[in-house]
Amino acid sequence: MSPLEFPGSWRPNQSSTVALYEQLRLRVIELADGGTLAVGTKLPAVRSLADQLDVAPHTVARAYKELEAAGVVATRGRNGTVVCARDDRWSALAAVAASYSAAAKAQGASFAEAVQLLAAAYDAD
Image (cartoon, rainbow, N blue to C red; front, side):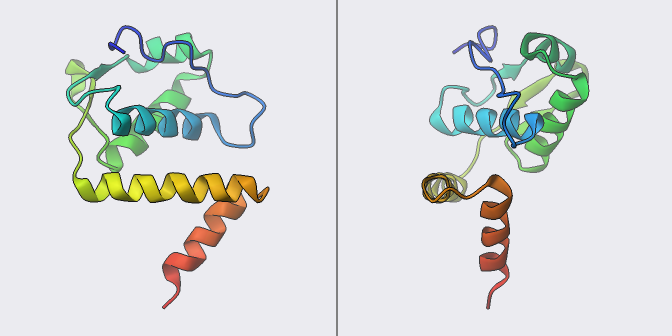
C-alpha cells in the first residue's frame, strides 16, 4: 500500500462504540506493525485524510498526536507525518495485545471493559 493508497478502502465504523480517532490509531498501528506501511511512509495530511474518511480534522489530528506519542509516527512540520521504526519489544507487545483483544471480544467484553481489565492487571503487584 503506497501512501497514496492509504487508507485504501478502510473506513472507520461510525456506529462502533470505539471512538473514530481510536479506530484510525489502531488501523495505522496494524498496518505499520504488519509492514504494509513501511518505515518512512508519509501519511496523508490531516485535512486530506479527514476528507477521505468523512470525519472531522480533529479526529485525524488526535489519532496522529497519539500515534506520535507512542512512537509509531513522527510529525515533521511541513514535511508531514511519517511512519517510524519500532523495536522488537514493541512488536512482541503488539502481538500479545492483539491476542488479548481477540479474547476480550470473544468473551463479549466492550472496549472500555477490556481496557479496565488491562489497567487493573498492569497495576497489580
